[in-house]
Image: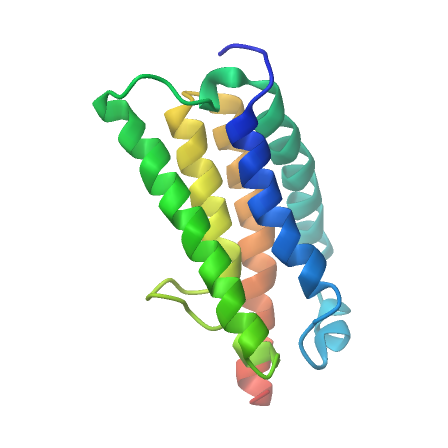
Length: 160
């Protein structure tokens, strides 16, 4: 692991944050009602994971492009997942913006808004051979996907 700035990490974080900034003004109907019911433990996992993933994605240069070898396939797959994440958001922003729209699958990926970026950053950690990022992503995934799964279950039960 090599300390240094990762422009690939920065690109990923921009791809992650821009739709979320737009989402803040386009939240699903009744979202605040669902947010009040979030597990505090899952929320702690999510916040800790967010801080570490964002930091670790930027401070290791191991994620930057290298001459092509088969190992680069991990980066390609990871980037495809991030592109799918962007397309998921296009689908959401074109929808009626209900809780069901927020938690629908995309290209067969359940809870796409939560699982696609988690998987993408996990594969970025594998690509960079960075155990710290991999562990941070697992922590993030437990919280983030857990919260989204609970919201989806609640939305499905309420038929929202």
